[in-house]
Amino acid sequence: MVAITTGSDRTGTPRRFPAGRKAELAAYVSEAGQVTVAEIAERFDVSTDTIRRDLDRLAEDGLLVRTHGGAMSTTAVPQINTGFDNRLGYQAQAKEKIGALAATLVDDNSVVMINAGTTTVALARELKDHRGLTVATNSLRLPPELSTDCFRGLYVFGGAVHIADQKTIGPVSFHSSTGNHDLDVQCDLALLGVGAVSAETGYSTSNLEEATMMSEMMARASRVAILADSSKFGRRLFAQIASLGRADYFVTDAEPPEELAGALRDNGVEILVPSA
Image (cartoon, rainbow, N blue to C red; front, side, top):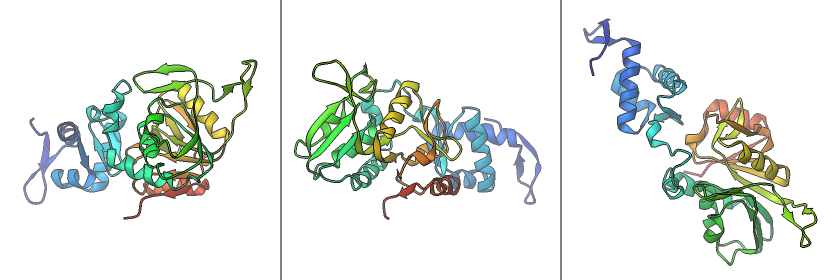
């Protein structure tokens, strides 16, 4: 690629015109897959603040995806139709840390609702030492991941089955044995993985019906824990699930940026991050 330049800096080195830098930056992220702000700033010899602004603009244009502390290529982000097993490998270590930390919020002999997703599958594996749980979920993948020793009751919500995402989408309820009416269900803790979290728009996901289902799970819970890795920070997806204050805990793998962290705290949400 030919760099577009304008004049020279004090050392005589040609300065990149911003449009040219952004084009090179987009190409660099696309080739690298995932990069940090510090790496890009060093490569292009500009300030980190400038790089952050460039990344924000490129993300708005759909040329890359902003992450906590950097960016990634759009081809590196799992798409909606990507196989569930493939998405399990994305941010796998972060999900394991989140799952282990979220499991500490679960009390023995309690009732929990857990939504479908790859992060909540990691959580399910971490519940192996718990006992006496009643678990209700819309995940088809979660039940086999649970230790049979940890629960005394396991229920899967009905509805439309989404094979690719290993989940059901439907009402958060169960029919009576006679089938004449729906039974009211409540839980001690809802543990919900989300697709995006933003200081301005709260928690969101890509599917409208799924957002409705997750919001209903929140309404039926005494406490709510949101699970999201750092790649979800500062993003907004199509369907809002709830505002930030609907959750009691925000469980993640890295400290959120100050704007998001401040908004969470202002809304009474406790941020839980694994210790170093």
